[in-house]
Structure formats: C-alpha cells, structure tokens
Length: 71
Length: 525
Image 1 (tube, rainbow over the protein chains, first blue to last red):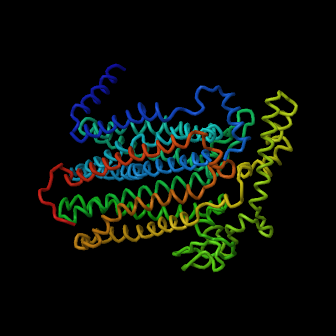
Image 2 (cartoon, helix red, strand yellow):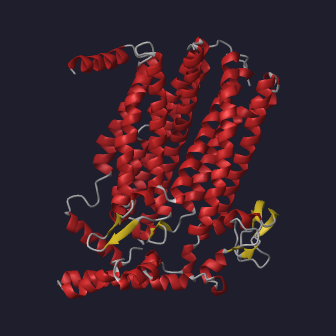
C-alpha cells in the first residue's frame, strides 16, 4: 500500500514541478478564484438563509412562507 | 414591493450566473471527447503527429476547464441564499442528483484529469488513453446529474409531498432519472455541446489554414471535428424534435409561447421565420409577417398532422371542448390546496392532532380522499399563489426569437459541418477562404445558439420554479433587494474578468500554436 501511495505522491509532485508557465498561470487563476468564491463570497455574501435552524424549525419556517402566500 | 424587487434581482442574478457558467461547460464536454478521439488515433497508429495534435487541443481544454471549474458552485450557493424556500421544498429530489454529481462524476473527472495532464511519458500509452476517456466520461456524467435535477423542475415526477417536513421526497429514483424530459434534455444538451466544441476546433483550425500555419494539424483536426460535429448536429436536431414532443405534453404553455401561437388550431403550422407585432392583442394576429410549414407543428407535437395544438388563449381562458382547464380554474384549485396547507399549519400550531390527521389523509396518496385531492387540487398547488391568469404566460418574444436562433443555427451547422468535411476530404477546403472565415465566425454563433437554447428552456418555464407546483415568487428568499442587487454586480464583475482571462489565454495559446512558438508577423485574416 505504501509504495503505491508513494508512487502517487511522486507522480503529482513531479507533475507540479515540471509544470509549464501556462500551467502555473492557470493554477494561480484557479486558486485566486477559489479564494474569492469561498473566503469572500461564501462568507460575506452567501450566508445560508435557513442555517442555524433545526429540521423542524426549517419546516415550520417554510410552511409559514408557503401559507402566507409568497409574492 | 421590496420583495417583488428581490425576486426579480434573484432571477436576474441566477440567470446571469448560469449564462456565464454555460460559457465554460459545453466546450469542456465536447473538447474532452474530441481530444480522446485524437489520442485514440495516436494509440492505434503510434503516429507522433496525433500525439502533438492531441496535446494542443488538450491544452485548450485545460485552459477552459481551469477557468470554468467551480463556477457552478455559485449557482449552488444561490440556491441556499436566494432560493431557500425552493431549496427546502424540493428537498432530496434536487439534492440527490447534485450529490451524485459531486461524489461520483466530479471526483472521477478530477482524478483522471491529473493523469491526463501529468501522465504523458509517465504512465503507459494505454493507461493515459484510459485516463483521457475517463475524464471525458466524468465531465459528461457531471452534466447528466445536473440535467436530471433541472428536468425535474420542468416535469416533477417520482416524488411525494411530505406534509410534516414540508418538502418533496423521492419515491422513485428511476422515474426522476429516466423521465422523458431528463433523457431528452441530457442527450440534447450534450449533443449540442459536442457540436459547439466541434465548431470551436473547426474554427481554430480554419484560422490556421487562413494563415497557412500548422496545415497538417488543421486539416487532421477538421477531418475529425467536422465529421463528429455533423453527426452530433443531427443528433441534436433529433433530440430537439423529441424534446418538442415532450414539451407539448408536459409544458404546453412553453410550446405555445415558443411558437407565439395565441389561438390553438388543428393541423397547426410551424413558423420558420416571423416578425412579431408589438401589440400581441392586435386583431390582425401576432405576426407582422410569417413563413410557416403547414401542419408541421401538429405533427412535431403529437406525431399527428391533424392534431390540435392549444394556443396561449386556450391555456389561459380554457377550452372545454378540448378538455383544457382555464388558468382561473387551476388557480381556484391551487388556492384550495394552499388553504389545506394553511389548515395544517393552524392545527399544528394549536396542537390539534385530529385536525392535523384529517389534512394528512388528503396528502396521503394511499388514502382514497388523498388520491383525489392530490390529482385534482395539489397538482395545481403553485397556481394558488398567482394573482392573475396572465401570470401563467412567459415572455413570448424572448422564447419565439431564441427558439428560432437555436434551431436556425442548428440546421445551418449541419450543412456547414457536412460541407467542411466534404471539402476537406477532397483537399479543396484551404482554397475556399470565404468558408474558412465563416468557420472562424461560427465559434461565437455556436455559443449564441447554445445560450438561446437555455433561454428557451428556462424562460419558457416561467412563472414556475417547479412546474405547476411552485412559482418563482414563492421560491425566493425574503432578503433585501439591495444586497441581491449588489451581489449581482459583484458576480458580473467576477465572471467578466474570468471570461476575459480565458479568452486572452486561449487566444495567446492559439497564436503560439502546438509547439508554443510565436509567429513574428501574422498575416491578417
């Protein structure tokens, strides 16, 4: 098991080491994008609207929304 | 008032996010398969030309994949924030396909994409080829589960509404996964993505031929992509036709709006081209001019050239002769279903178990009164929230013109790709420079047609978030419209930057060519 794991780790390490300039640029774009999405957007702009409520409270909240008529 | 604005902002934000997300997806789906086909040729022939060609297209695939990856996650965030009532109401039915997508397809794709990019000369040729194909399969499986979830919104089957949890629960996975809407939607969306990718490869290769660069690679790529694209353009047309027949049954208002068919008719003709009047209630009819094919709409809808296709007025005012309920009647039935839910809420808050049990029986398909209530009233639940029958009509001009852009472009692509394949085979394509220029310009047209297809599918579903069960007004969260408006522009900026980065990197890599060498003085197109 360990030799296989070592092979996989080495495969990835060599892959990253021998990456072209284009590959590096793309990884930077990916990391910046993921940071913006998870550390900025998710934290500050996407609070889960029903978060912190138990299943029963969520059901009661949505029942209230549905029976109060929405728009 | 603020809530209505919130709904509109939330819809605009979701539509904008989905449009940008779909700029990345179809090329990933199609180019992964085309790269796999080219690598298969390398594996079978051992010719390094195909290895070089595969690696070039794989590089462009990698750019598109890297920039586009995880853009769909913002859509999932929006479900929780802007559409919390919807997210709770659809429950596990929507969650299950998305979870399968995340666990199975995305990890399959992510695992093998590493071997695909890092594995050249490190794993055997066969193992590398398998990784490339598995990446393509994984990408397309991801699309399958997303499209299954979307299809359920258009045609909610295989579920039961649970009164206690106030959410729909899946009763049959296979009914959800293999519904006619899901099956047609998957094959139609994937086949059209293959066509887009084929046009991308043909367009980029045409650009090389125009500049007399990389001519062997360009001709070889065109040979594969034009044949592949022509075949899948036909598959797109066939699945589109089947989708139309399903829409006629399960979303008749969408079909009527796509055709701007206000008055239903037997032996209805299909509009090929037309210009709509501004005043749709005009006595002269909805068209300034129109060219149609007699009886074709009836045949395509119900496979019977004389069948009756209901129009918008039939579906709003009802047509007793044809057994079509009026929107008013459906709204009355929906209000009764909503009122029963209100009774349940009051009983639950009062702790009246007998009253709760009475309502529960109505929502139980196994109980005699439940079977009737669910069929006659709950089936129209969403209509109970509408304020006027006119709300059941989607945006007719948007659907009418989007549908014609999609179909017109699709038919043209069949002819174009077949012609390009034939001329390339005869060795005369390089001299048809006007056709090569046309191929380059077809890249943005393919994206436009693809987006127009989604406009038909999603704008045609309005006013529903879930067809007949939940209108968008009820699906949205009650959050301040100002915050949704602010995030709209934030995402617009983020996605525009991402798209600009992708286009600039792609163009640079195309200019560099397969060996990464810049050509000093490029000849103008």
